[in-house]
Length: 232
Image (cartoon, rainbow, N blue to C red; front, side, top):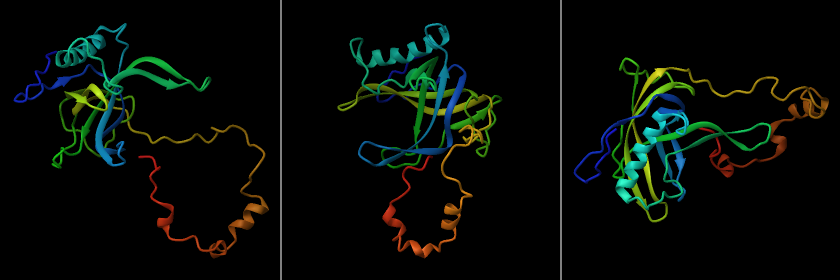
């Protein structure tokens, strides 16, 4: 894999990942994220899962090529800032212990802004099937789909965040598609019925029959603020 030269008059090379399962694919509709200053930033993105580089030579070579660009730019004695690496060990929350538990996979994040710093609108990433045909935007890509990602690298040095490397999402080729399924709760997730509130009890039923204005003036909707906590 070739390294980018990063001179001002040279465009970074387009790089390709090994194939792997993906998560959190926001390829057609960007996701809004809040900056430290409180403003919002919209980005397309995808997370790629690769094997453990300690046992998988392909993953090891891929991460080595990214790390090599960092060393080439900043020198061998430079360390990454707190968020300077777009890859890390994948972990999940253990239901037994409530602690994070490593899965043995490597999690790599790719992002793409919706506009440049100058305000010019950027198109979404290119998405295609295994044959190179355009993927329909109405067909969301679910977790577990097998993909390859096309990207460029961006090396940065920030007074606050230190030094790091970001992976700019250009496109995704879908090799095996898993349909997106909105998360839902199984009917028996809470187990057997428990003592407590009963929607059929006289107390609850009597509340359902009280006219709405008996609760007094609840004020304008704006008094409650926007629904900032709603999931994307």
